[in-house]
Image (cartoon, rainbow, N blue to C red; front, side):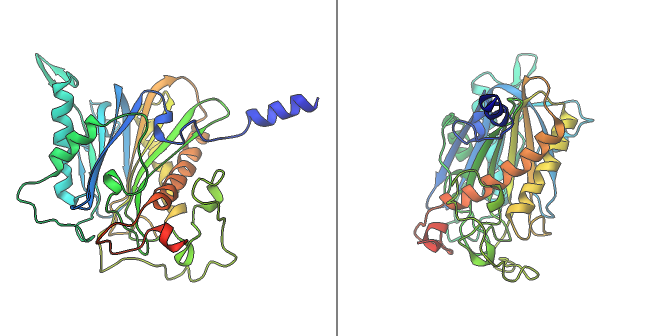
Length: 338
C-alpha cells in the first residue's frame, strides 16, 4: 500500500525535463550568436520538421516580422524557425539570415522549384546598453545565419544570443529557458530573452519574484524575502533604456494554431509573475507558442498553467545566469548576490 501511494504521488508530480531547457521537447533545436563588442545577439529556435505556431502580443511597443500570418484565420499554420533578436528594428534582419540558411538546406514552403522558409521573429531594444552600435552594415543578418548554424539541443543561458546585452530595471537580463514534464507525460518548455522595463528582483534582490515557482535551486534557491518593500511604485528603467521581453513556449502536445495562440495568452502570466511591472506601453512583450504535434491528448488547462510557470522560471534563470562584461551599465545578479 505504501509503495502504491508513493508511485501515485510520483506520477502526479511535475518535474523539470532532462536538460531543463526548451529542447527537452523532442525535435527542437536552439542556436545562438553573440557579439561582445556590439553587446547584442540572436537566438534561433528550429527543428527537424516545421511546427505549428501561434503568437500573442501584450506589450505596447512590439517589433515583429511575419507574425500576422500566425493568426488562426490565416493560410500558413506551420513555420520552419523562430527568431529572437536584439537590435531593435535592425534586429529583424536576423530573420533574413535564417531564411537564407534554411533555403540553402532545402527547407521551406514549396513554390514550384523554389523553397520559401517561413521564419517569424521578434526583437528587443538593446541599443543603449553600452555596446558599440556604429556599424557600417547591419550585422544582424550574419548573426541570424550564425545562430542557425549553431542550432543544437544544448545551449548557454544568461549573457548569450538575444540576451547578450539585455538589461532590466536594476540588473542585467539574459537568455533563459526551463522545462516541465506533466503527469500525462507531455512536455512543456520555455525560452525567453529578458530585457524588461521592470525588475525580476524583489526590492532590488537578490530574491526573485518568480521564487514560488522555482524547482529545486535552479535560480539560486533563495526563496522569497521576509518583506516585499514598495510594490506600488516599482523599479523601472523608464527614461534611461529601451525594453521588451520576448519568448517562446513549446510543447509536444498536438495543438491547432488556435490552441497555440491560447497557450501563448496563458504563458503571459509567467511574465507578470516574474517581472514587476510587465506588459507596459514601453515593452514589446510577445510570446510565440510551438507545437511539434508528437503526442495526442493533453489537458489544455494544465498545459496553459505549466506554460506560465515555465516562463516565470525561465525568466529568473536567464537573469540568474547572466555575467558581467566590460562596459556594462548594470550589475549581473551574481554581483548583487556576492
